[in-house]
Each structure stands twice: as C-alpha cells, then as structure tokens.
Image (cartoon, rainbow, N blue to C red; front, top):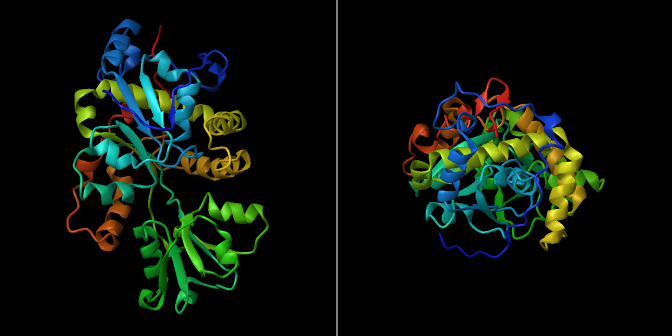
Length: 365
C-alpha cells in the first residue's frame, strides 16, 4: 500500500528484549487457537505471513500522548517488538483523523478515547472494528471553578466542551438533576485549563488525566466531578482496525496487538523508562513542547491505573458486558438514529486469544 503522511515515525532501534526479559516471562503455547497463537508457529511461518501483509499504518490522533493504545505502539516500534514479529509498521503522529483514515483503508489501526467514540462512528461507518479496550474507567471528568459546590450550580453559568458533549458528561449532568437548557454550552477552541480558574467558563468537560492534572501541578484551586460519583459507567481507550484488513489478515492484526501489548506491559512495569522514551520521541519529532516529560508522567500515572484496574482482566481484553453501560448512554444521549449491536462493532476474541493463563504468548525462535 502506497501511503504518504506527515509526521511518520519509522526510527528503528536495536531489540531490547534481553534487557527487559525480567519484566515478562513469555512462553509459546501450543494449546491456544492457531489463528492467533504465533507461539505455535515457526519464525519463518509468521515472518513470511507478516511481511506479505506489507506496511501497516497506525494513526495517533493525539500525537505522543502517554495513553494506552498510543504510547505502547510507539514503544513497540522503539523496543523492536514489531521487528521481532516481522511487521513493517509506520506511525503517523501528526494528529490526523484516525477513524476516517482507517475506515477508508488508508491506514489500518487507530486508538480512540472510549467505546462511545467507537459507537458514534459506527453509526456512520461499517468498516471499523474494535479489537481492544484498555479500561473500565470513563476517562472524562467535569472540572471547574472552585465556586461550584455541585453540577447544579452550572445552571445560569457556562460549560465548555471539546468536539462534542460526550454521552458520559450528558449522563452526569442528568443524574445531577441539571437543567441543561439553563446552561450555556461553549465549544472550546484551545485546551488551556486555566480558563475555569479565570472564570471565562464555569467548567469544562475534559480528560481527567490531562487538564485537571495540569491545574493540580500548578497549585491552582478548582473542583472536579467524576462519573463514578453519579454511578455513570464507561470505558477507557479502544483500539480500532480496518474491518476489511482484519478479515483478510487476522493473524497479522493479532501480531500487531501482541507487540503493542508486550510494550504496554513494559510501560506498566517500568514507568520511568517508558516515559523517558516517549518524551524523547516527542522531542525528536517536533512535539516536545506539546508533550513535555512532566506532562506525560502525570498523564501515565493516572491512566496506567485505569489499565491495571480494568474489569476486563488482562490489558486490552474486551467483552460485550464491558460496553453495555456505555451503549445505553449512547442510545440515550448520543443523538444517533440507529446503533449497531455491540457484537457488530467489536471482536472480543482477538486479544483474549493472545494470552495463555497470565502470560502473553510470544513466539519461540
């Protein structure tokens, strides 16, 4: 596939598997399904297959953010895990529209912020399949001026949002008894969280690991409301793949996820080294100012816990049950005419089949 994107990262580094072998005891297992168990194949078998698939393009819609489904892709490239599986991976970190490019077949993988993002896109596109969900904690929060005692206090005030008011946020407002007709909704044009401190807007629907953490680090006074306080459930970060590519190259897609999940384990095991590496990559590729190390460390400190505490169990494993609460929220608040069944939007087996007990299956040489 001939593809040209700005912001491509293709820097190869020497494989560091021997250095970090202590972080994962990975073994080949002949008992898992043959369509996903690279460990049951010889290296020549999976190499020939994976090379034949050609270039796999991953779109990072959020640049070098320290988020699951993103930093692990960068690290899988840097640690040489893609190379070990004979995968030719290109990374577009320019903040392009990942869903659009993947749905059209111009790219193969991208990560989204939650299952509701997948569902809203699925209402208009049938060429996207979710293959991994990284947590069962909704990543959003509503943070605002310290004058707010409750979300009800937003009545007569203003609430900022980015792109759209998420179903999670709508559910929070509803559960809090907020009359949204009395709240001025403001579409934000920048990500400066201090606008709530300066009372330019009373509150913002934001990503809990990012803007509020920046306010904390700066010692700014503010209040924050979380979905869990209103018994609103959701998901954190989802990896999507082009559905046609998945159907034609299932084992290749499985190996892409295998490499990223191994890198994710590295980041969960050695946070400091992981953040050092992603910060260095951001700097080398002209995004150091947007993703300084201290910000990346704050983000990963929060989001890594969302991965560790996921009800899905092993990182990336997803089930229909995990998505059901958010599915109902999208039907109620997502303003979509029709919504495909959850089973039509996800593949629950691809990642689950990569594990043998507690171990991620890795190929024997």
